[in-house]
Length: 376
Image (tube, rainbow, N blue to C red; front, side, top):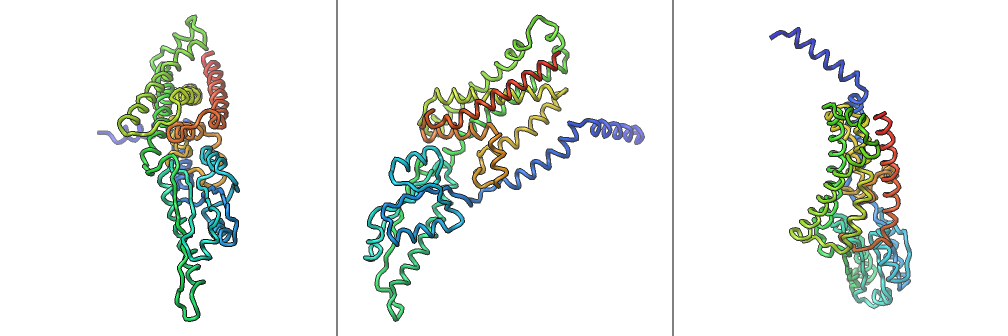
């Protein structure tokens, strides 16, 4: 064994690595990007709960309790409503995570030393968030009851009456707070992304490696026909996989599918414009399958992390939240969970589908033009 030859090979390999700008990006930029994103976005702590206030009593006592909720660092009042239809709309659209509902007679019951009813209606699709929110609410109400008890004490410190708040919670969309119901619909988005993105990128690069791409470029096939012929099979495979996962989730794991299966398939087709387009783009900047694989992970990990699949977007720093608006998986994750758990239709989901379609058409157009240019 010659150490000189080994040293020569090592020197050659290091020179090749650092001569390639893409490889330097993967080695230095990608780990730094992953650390920053995981450090800021991977946060299961619930520090921001969009809250709607529905106070039908409007008494001193009800306002005092609401003040304790809204002065906490968790419950952020964003909507003040006056009807149950508004409450339903806010929860359906995901504009509020919690609705604090105080009915008439709350203050009267408190002053009479009776149990006063308070209802918290919250979005139960994310069971972890719902449980944490309930813990926060119970703490606030416990402190409120303790202060009420102190106010009723006589001169000797003896408590003469004990008014209390009867908290009635209601979890919408996921009544038993089953975490599988929340995560499994997101798995559909994850698998559709992985399959369509990876297959489209790797298959086209493989054509370059074995030399058949040059044969295709000199054939009578037009570039647009070549692109369609390359991408459509992977789109169909991803679509079939999404159907199989949906069937498995509904029949085996008993995940509720309350919305339209046709809307689910339609939304998936829109999303595939983006993933197939990015796969096509990766194929134009990669010369080998190894490069394509590294480029895939460079895109895939931040996309999944910033999608809201595992970590609530509302708890991320403001600048990271703005970045998620460029992430197509963010919109698709909302759509797919809403169809499964909320059963809402396109009249509500168009807010997510329109930007998803714009991003998808932009990405597929740009990638197709770049791929066509690389062929020429």
